[in-house]
Each structure stands twice: as C-alpha cells, then as structure tokens.
Image 1 (tube, one colour):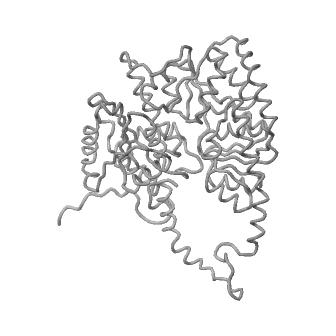
Image 2 (cartoon, rainbow, N blue to C red):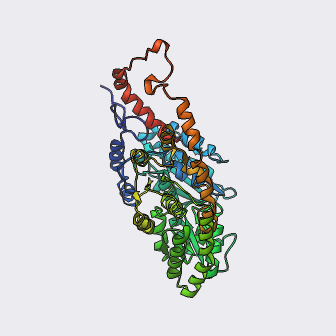
Length: 507
C-alpha cells in the first residue's frame, strides 16, 4: 500500500462553521497552535479580546493591515494566502483607492505541507528588496498559512538595506479589520524603536520646533490641523498620525511628548509607545466637555502650567459652544460601527442636542476609551463594546430612532423599516470631528438625513400591500407562492458557508 498524501484539514464537515476563511475557526486555531503559532495567538487574544462574536462580522481583517501598507510611500506589500482571499483583498483595496500592485505568493497542498511555501516567500522577498524603490517590505500571512505555521519570523530583518516586516493576520485571531491596522502599525513601531536604540536614524522630512503630540488612529485629514491649533497655546504641536505615511515618520512619532489615543484600541502600538517612555492620553477634543477635558489631560501629561491650559480652553471652548448652538440636532440617533470612533461621534451628537440611547462599537473596551464611556453612561447611553450585528439591529428595533448610523447591514435594516440611516464609514468618519470644525460639520449631515423621513414614509405607503419575503410581489388571482421551508433547511449549511466566504473577502 502506497504512502497516503499529507493533508491539513482546516475546515472539514458542513453546517455552521464550515467553509470560508472563518469557517472551522476552532480547527484552524488548533492547527495554528500545533504548528508553533501559540505565542502570537496568545498575544492577539490579550491585545484584541473577543466578544459575543468570536469571528469577524465585517470585511476580512487583513484588509486593515493591507490598507496601512498600501498608503505608505516606498513600501511593498506581499500577501500569502488562499487565492480567493487575495483576490478579494486586492479588489477591495483598489476599490478604496489603492494605486499600487500587491505581491502574491501562491501555494498548493504540496508547497504548504512541505515547507516550500516559506522558501517561495523568501525568494520573492529577496527578489523584491531593492533599496532604490523600497524602505520596507510587508509580508502578511492570511488564515491558511498562519494555521499551517508558515514562519515569517525566520525571514531576514533586512535585505539589501530594505526592512522586512512579517505579520500574521488570521480571521480566527483578529476580530476586526480596524485592529489589524494596529497589528502592522505596532510591528513597524517595534522595528523602528529597535533601530533608534541601535543608533542614529534618518530625520523626518519635516520636524516641528516644539514638543509634539503623536496622534494614534486614522482620522479625517482636517483633524490633525485642528489638533495643531488646539495645541499651539500649550507650546505643543501635532506630531505624525500613526499609522504613518512613510517609514521615517515612525521615528518622529516615537520622539513625542505624549500620545493621543484618538482610536483607543491600538493596543500593540500603545505598548511600543509605553516601552519608549511616552504617556498615553485617551479620548479626543470633541465637543465642549471633551475638548476641555482633553486639554486638561494633555497639559497634565506634558507638565504644562494650568494657566496656559486655561487660556487654551478660553480660546476654543466658546467657539465650539457657539458652533454647536448654531446648528442643533433635534432627534433620536443610534450609533454603531467598526471604525473605533463611535463613542466620540456619540459625544458630539449629544452635545449638539441629539438623544443617543445606544452606541455599539465592534472594537473592545480599553482603558483609553474609559473617559468617553463614563461620560456617555452618565448621560444614560447604553455603550456596547464588541457589539455584534444582532445587537446593533436589535437597538434599531428597540429605540426606533429618527436616524440610524451604522454599518451597511444596519443601514439596510433601518431603511427597510422606513428609518433614515447613514453609513458610518463613508458619511460620518469621513468628516472632521475635532474642535470647532467638527462641531460645525456633523450636524449638517445629520439634520439633512433626519429630514428625509417623509420620503421614506411616502415610499412605504406606495409599496404597502405588496407582501414581504417569499410572498413579495403582485400575484395573479391573489395566489401567493407556497413557502418551502424544507428547501431552506436543506441548503442552509451551503448558504452559511457562502456568506462567510463572501465576508472573508470584504463587501
């Protein structure tokens, strides 16, 4: 009898949990541990604790780290994963504005189980490492290579003067794509911090003449400008935004007076800043209360005299109060999303006059979001960390808001109930939130959306009586189609697998 071929069964069986990159998550997690990935999975479990949903409910997490690399100058990106995942990730990235090729190291069963895949990755990186074009090459293991134990840690740290950063971003270890941004940002900060410790490094293209505050988390382009204006009376300046746009900005980010954790879930990045001896300040300058408290916290972290802090508050807080009063919001709004700034948006909405009974964020609770959580809960807001889609949908049904802000399925759910809704990522986080600019920007889009309620009511009235679900439509002689629950049950497992496969490549 001949030798049986080696196989790694990552998602056997059918039904719930089968198929797709997130299918058979326990099997894949066990395979990864058996293949030597226990240390990194334990670190991810501590950095990104899971909640009621123990697998991503949004796009593939690796989309977040991929976006970080594609936005950096002189940075090459190489993916190692199933072809369907790589196709979906690159398609989604280019849909969101990437103008750069993504490297891909394909594999098959033989190269995966024999270790040849790692050799192929190594060969690809060596061929790509041209210092005339790149400062760094980012190599990312997706689910299957991670579960198979492909050891990116064995890659050289530098080839021809080009840095090599290898990361694992499995869907069974990273709950959201927002946190995957931190995986790469933290890995780059760790590398840069080691370089600083070893000796002189390249100076950033521009350097402030005052101590700087590093801004942690992706944000609207105008917000760093507002941060700079708020910090100027304190004798401080806004530093780089992490994730950065080029490698040498990492050195400037580390060389700061303090770090503003605007997005408070960047746990790996915060660990590197803490190791560098930098103080971390949570929350952000949103609204009247938020701006005053944030300026106080920055002043305390940087040893700024209280009279300077008070002068800054006297300069900006009245302007913010005036902007909020000029365009009040009248209505009930529920907020949910996976960007990490949901609590900040809710604070600004409440100070604008809105009633906000519920805030759901897919990100976890951390010490650096506690100021926002405490403020919101004091206002009677239910704050749900690691919110599942089901919890967000239930909140819309429970509170029947005048406007629902959320992810695509939340928006669809609300509109199907004649409730105006806005997609958080494109319509809320893509506008200024900080200082006077944020106070004047958000109410306009919120009020315009709430004013659309009459249009939804007209559409609901127009389509009244056309049925729902399998009976939707106008049927001859009033004969409704017969529901076939046995067919639905028969194909439920296949539909679930297809849904998870779709989520794995983004939407």
